[in-house]
Image: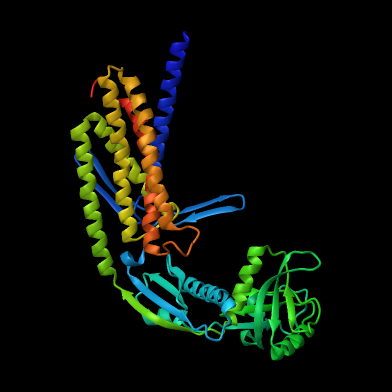
Length: 461
């Protein structure tokens, strides 16, 4: 067999393999895209289907790694409705160089309470402007605003607890066996990240006021060899073992921490001793009806626009346009599956980013098809024209998409730079747009090219 025939056989085998990989990926994404509850009923002369479909719940374990998703589309506050709160921390009694840390501590408390509330996809952000220190909280799906305020707005309660006197030090303890002492967050002056002078490993340093130092001395003296637990809002955050009585009012919590873990624990401890009161500056109950109406109109506009784009492609490019439309359908299936897997919280700006990325997905095909037309008009064979069309359109596709990705990066502001946007809504738009661009490159280049290689046999355009 000649080398030419060998190359042809290899190319045919490769394109068939890629085609079936695309088919498998399409059906997998379609399965992941199933709604949570859907009744499928089809009654035809020779076909009767009456079944109940449901989106899968992923629970994958590979060694120590776990991946769990309920595969529902997460809805943002503007779609699902809920509660929007703006909290302000009074920093007048806190040193200026400690205010950022105090605000971060308050944010950690709010986040923990929101988690206890069981809110799906909440948003808790800090904002600083002209001497104002604020926390912005969005709670999708919550309708009782008074209950949300009661939970989030209360003062953090930090307290130290010990085991019963008759309990042996070697006995394994649970959280229900710890008993309250009179040592609380009010007695704690400061918790900070420090480093052990002996081992150099990160530790958490505790500093008590004079009254707290005396209480802590008594507690550690009667609990040598036992655990002393620290609870925040009745939830244990650490339970170190007492090695010796501590009389100085300065203690160290060690235990193989890394820098981030020790820093996080220090923030949690400071949250319980935070002297800055938090007040409700703004509260708003956003109805789900308005969100649902807005979503329906957005989806309707997007669906009409998508149909017009698909019709335009078929009318202008015929079979090639139909292939591009198939790639566009696959683009939609992959996009929705990724939204569920990450997961992405969909907001109205996020939907706008998705709809915009649809246009970008079609734009790649138009550039490629026009280049193919030019090559065919120059007398090139169809196969050569197709490969040249894809190759020579790549520069334009790359430049357009890279420019859009740079814009998405600036809008998303992943590093939280203060001189750039920090709005959650704008970041949602940037994220869905960037994901759409990435998927459109795959469907526009890989999927469309493979389908054309497999199905398109016409000699002219």
